[in-house]
Image (cartoon, rainbow, N blue to C red):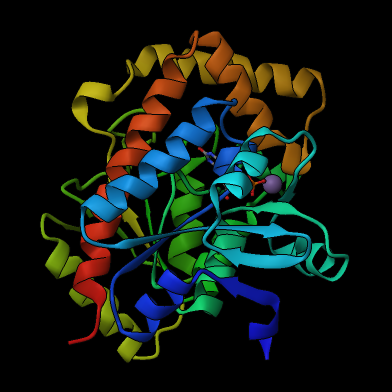
Length: 304
Ligand code: PSU
Ligand code: MN
């Protein structure tokens, strides 16, 4: 039924049918997470890294109401370089599709589309979470609800400390979402390898992580998994420099009363300006590292 809304690239469709490893990628990170042209370069390089490591990449977005599983070069360019492309999360999804509009998918909506297409592994930079002062603003990313419900494994570098990472972990625990550290026993904080928040689940082995994921779904414990993959040491930012940049960006967002879905893109752009582009370099490198890990995980997750 829902297949009528999807346009799956032949290569991806055949890979899913034949139980070959496929890794999906989101498009909000392209359209709202990074400036042009670094965003389109990042998107293409991610696809190449996934291919080089034995899996098929599937970048997801919505074009004229069609849920595209796999974007052509011109569609990628469109996502990367058109003004006013909608940021589409679960709330906005049906409206954008039914009105035949175009939009970039967030972690939440990329999980939804991945599941519709039969893709089990999704790679991004960082997930959304519980924002600081959520007790006043109620700003909790729809990504967390999606992780609680949709059977897709999400490889990310943790979450940024623009969020309240402690509350984000609490939410995920309440909703039964395993957050497993890959080669770390701490939740990575995106730009840095450490956050001070210890993880209960961690492993140095992708095989072991894949085994847990398979077991979860075989037990009908529906929902996603966060595979927390720290930024490689050589690309990590100085923790004090990034903490100050985040504080300043948050102050500015408060001053300009930025809220709702504009908040995360606003903060990302501010942090990039404050750090004179260093945060963007780190962001790009951590996504590449996630693409590599995602490909390895997808290979482990194909059924025997
Ligand atoms: N974190 C990043 N870059 C991003 C995002 C998060 O480092 O581009 C995007 C992702 O698409 C994520 C979304 O799903 O922001 C979360 O937005 P919100 O906080 O409005 O739910
Ligand atoms: Mn929000």
